[in-house]
Image (cartoon, rainbow, N blue to C red; front, top):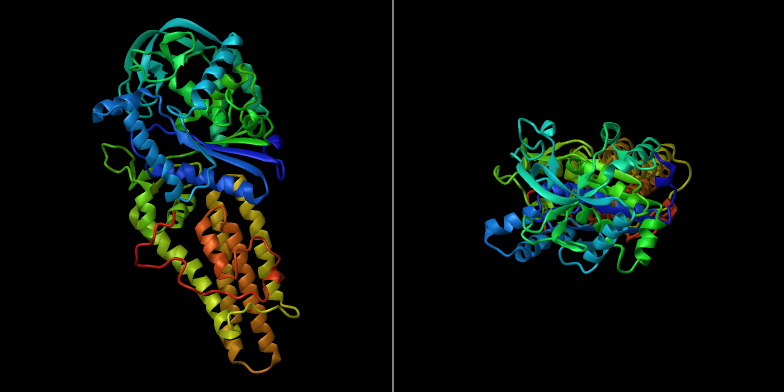
Amino acid sequence: MPANAHSINPSHRYVTTAIPYVNARPHIGFALEVVQADVIARSHRSAGADTRFLAGTDENSIKNVQAAEAAGLPVETLVERNSDHFRALQQGLNLSYDDFIRTSSDPRHAPGARKLWAACFRSGDIYKRAYRGLYCNGCEQFYKAEELADGKCPEHGTVPDFVEEENWFFRLSRYEETLRRLYERREIDVVPESRRNEVLAWIRGGLEDFSISRSAIRARGWGIPVPNDPGQVIYVWFDALANYITALGYGTDEALFRRFWLESDSREHVIGKGITRFHAIYWPAILLSAGIIPPTRIFVHGYVTVDGRKIGKSAGNAIDPVPLAGELGTDALRYYLLRHIRPTGDGDFSHERFRQAHDSELADQLGNLVHRALSMIDRYCGGIIPAPEGTDIRGDDLLHQAADLRKIVAGSIEAYTFDEALDAVWSFVASTNRYVAEQQPWALAKAEGSEPAIRLRNCLFNLEASLQAIADCLSPLLPETSEKLRYKLGGPLRGVEARELAGLKVDRGGALFPKGSISRNPG
């Protein structure tokens, strides 16, 4: 891990999702990305970092224009409607982002994009020439014939259009050696390692200049006009990538830009594997041309399939994540995406496995542990957490595991291995359930004498402290569950010393994960 990206308790952290096209409503594949980014941002905040989390929508795209034409709508109407659906993910998935940018209408964006263009132009990296090539509207990029799969786009499976026009180009070739050094030295890190190797292979294979404008006629007049050339609009990817800094005030009010980009300890992008080249090659080169430092980390996740099939309109399997979260609860969906989809690989979603994960893992394991522990504190101690007494070797071992758990979970999130973070929590849940079975507090409550009474109080205290550790560790991953559990344990306490829990009154309340009923969507 690069030292510059992983300083301990950094003062500033910046986390972004990619901004998706709004030619359609969001689906579960993008839900994976925003939930992963949310976990990263929440974890940074819990560590005391001044954190800013950005999301948004990419609206100046030819494919958005085509979708609007197909729907018989003005482009402005379609992009606003679908952007609202993406914005609604904040409530539907309990996301903690601080800002949401729309590239077609946010007053910060166009001035910043034009400023970035002008900075690259002054560096001598923008020039105009005629070009012909194969263009995929889905990817919004040109392909070489040898890059196609049986003559089709490798990402979308469609035959590209042949396009011939005069465009403005960016001198990417100038930054080949600089980018190679940045990645070899891990001054920009890419996770996972396989994606970093892929980026280095692209660079070592040679970088070619690329087009950064489109004719206004082909774009139907939709997009940001090129400065001093109204017959061209800025290429959607140059425009879209700029959002990461225009949202911070680049070109409008730069105090935030200075704080969270220029002076930030880390600048982290969370993206899908299909757009790695844009973020790991084009974006750092554009920034370097403009005299701006590049990002520090790029986390690349895989795709979500549904019942083994790739998500697509024609397949009819583009599941809207907001109603899905309403079926069993927001945290149930977050849990499935984070634990049952490998963070850096492709993973499958099915309703059957979703419900099974809710019932057998959330309800039967964690939910049952919480219910048993609080019921015994309620029954044997009047609902008041007892103070520990004397030496309790088994209990001390459990509390040591709890302390280690916090470190393991924090480290796993920092490494973007969210599944391993939840694996560690559920392993500790299993250890705590074994502790209950071994100690048999129900038997201690029936036994006579002071020793069983002391052992009972110690056991119940240890259970409470263990649940508090679980609540702390779940805070960035399953935030609503964490808050519910904290209130059950006596209040919204965070990271308290175990002995501070004694004397608090627990609230057994209802089940954390009720089975067989439709959950309220908490937002």
